[in-house]
Image 1 (cartoon, rainbow, N blue to C red):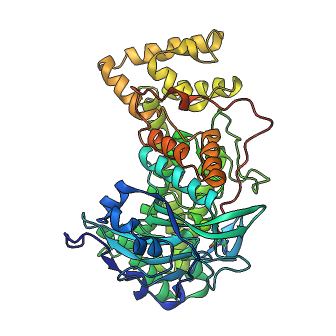
Image 2: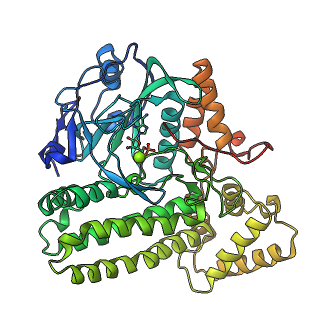
Length: 489
Ligand code: AMP
Ligand code: MG
């Protein structure tokens, strides 16, 4: 824990610069022509110890656009590698800059990063820039995830650059300021394991442990424990994704954090109709990152982390492999426990038993068969309005419903307790794809942010069962073909 501070404003450390220098490259800022603030996250600013008015001032906006460096910042691009759709590649921040780590009023250390801030040595063929649409999208979805109680990076601001960028179409350019527990990825470890020395690997691991798992710091076998902790946090995270129907879209190893936060919102989306095969990303032709595959893909990614840590786990590599494999065997069970407990809670069951799995499996099977909307089905069950579900009247569903009710009655708790458990486990509001698109269209094409602001307001309170915003629960009107999202470049 850092010392508390009363100073409002930037209060930066630059601890990442103490790491071996193959891990980053210091970068000069890449100014843009006409920065304009279009979104500012007031609540987040306050929790970071920042003042919204100062951030929105002329100087503040220049800083959020990357035209000038914030006080105490040392801009750098981080190096990392990663398996993209299974293929190992050198990557790194090709369009992002870490400015430093802010010490928050509560004593946490969080990364301040600009995304869309221009070219770096890791840009490969890219222009280093980001489009307004994708940055607003990341802002909306990450705020929603945060409000849903799912660990995530957050967005402090979006600034338009006054410059167009070329994608499939010409788009306004934008810079987003991203806040993260850190930006250390599985791919950061892969990078050092491949191109660094054991000492570098140790330095990175110790740094990550100190930031995210400080109680392990003086443990002798801390690298194995570190692996176990990351496995635990990722299992918990992916279970939370599954429980709300979130599909990340690009679960490459460079898009998986060591902190356990969701990161890099590209072609992600929430599922409307329940279908485990759902995939939104236009670049995921084979469905590698489909909804039902996410838990397994996380395990695959964690195995890449385990491999990278082998030299630190034990001197004897055979022994290291044995220990790492053992650590990995915990993942499926840990994930399953989180998921089952969460699913139980969604059904108002607080002490899940073996036979309850039947209830979960059969409900999901029926939902799939009847194209039931994922979020709304659980909302209706919470409200006791089964007659409004598309499955109502079907014999199998009615039997299921009877069994479920009988199971709930077996619990020695009040109805209110069950109600509360269900209400806090089943969101009313998710950022539905058609709503997100509508908000982005108004903002990008007409510079009208009202639609987006309204959406943000609603999804910031996702468990509000006393809501008057019922329009936002509606499923999308029938469209021609499945929803597709495009990579956030
Ligand atoms: P992402 O798909 O956002 O996770 O990015 C994958 C890799 O491509 C990362 O190394 C990014 O920094 C890089 N990248 C994405 N877009 C751009 C861009 N417009 N210019 C340069 N690099 C980019
Ligand atoms: Mg990425």
